[in-house]
Length: 464
Image (cartoon, rainbow, N blue to C red; front, side, top):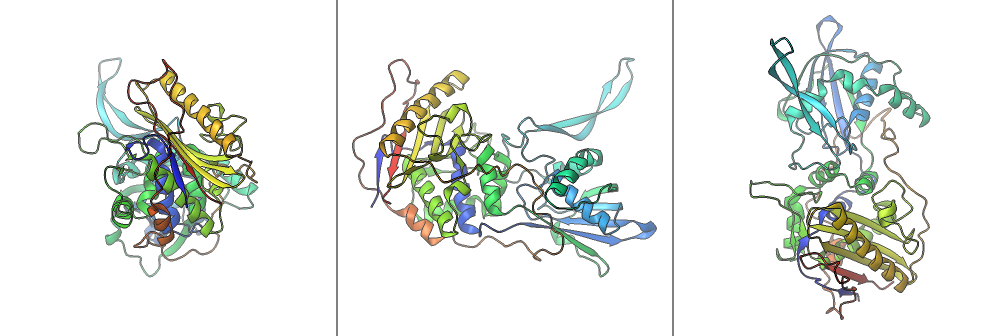
């Protein structure tokens, strides 16, 4: 069978955003990769030519301004332009821009301040959001924040012309100059909404799960990772899979979210997703198996080093001639550890790897030194296993969010997560590796090692 070689293979360390491989596996073994999430919109005529509109969410991890533009277009096509009450349920996880790294602000309240004349006036209180790197609970965003964003009608419509042109380029005709006049916006629990007999019902779908997984891994999106974990069954399901089905102990695996970002859940300081090298490598292998089972490749779910330009492994930090186009990988960075996990396309089949370097301090210098160590080791390993380029063309899933605009009909309900994760994936992860050979990871150079043990590098060499 297979063998895991390396150092500190069974010791649990923070794995940072390589956690998203675990989230990817849960999604890929819970859903068909072609699954889409349908957000339902109900418009009921009221007096004065107005409508009451209710949005029933589907926990779409990428429910953003583009999706709202689709909804507004569909409503205008149906003659719905003036809205008396706009309501939404708790499954609408709306963010203006789900892929924003620089962030955006939202008016979430007011406060009293003094102006230059010394007069007391009301000023807006703004909340700043950076979806890609945010630290948040799995329920984020809450209904208060969603409501605050939906009230910003001008912000929602600000980029509509760009959406119109992007849709047109994709062969989709949006309503050219829509109106979106809303008198009141509020949360209405899903259990309290009931459509009337004369209600107009519309749908807007998400991208498919395959695209969402690739997009999440492409720019290491923390928001979409947490949302995708919840959609696939949540932490309870992930923990039952590893602790129950696989019998992995807490000494090798413990998760608090789907992203890998540190988050203080209980007021006890920073909390991290942690796993051993062995568990990470077996998870990456299982993700490859899950992809193949649905006639996909790991390149469909993870970014290709040096080829997927704009991804976290497409730039200078992880681009070397020895590895370019020959490996898929997921990066990870937290204040304690720098990580990289993935698969090399070897001449005799796939070879799986995971590197985890503890850093002495959260500084750019230490982080870059750790990445350089990983780069050196991965280049050696790629040469050792005779890595060859994938047959692959760059696939940027973030190029637009318009490709699943529903012109006609969508399923009545979004498919619900199954009870059990795919059995074949469980078998793959559950295989116990043979005893490790002598450590093959090169030790850190003198003077370059962090204060804590520096290496946690494991290499999985799989048969064809």
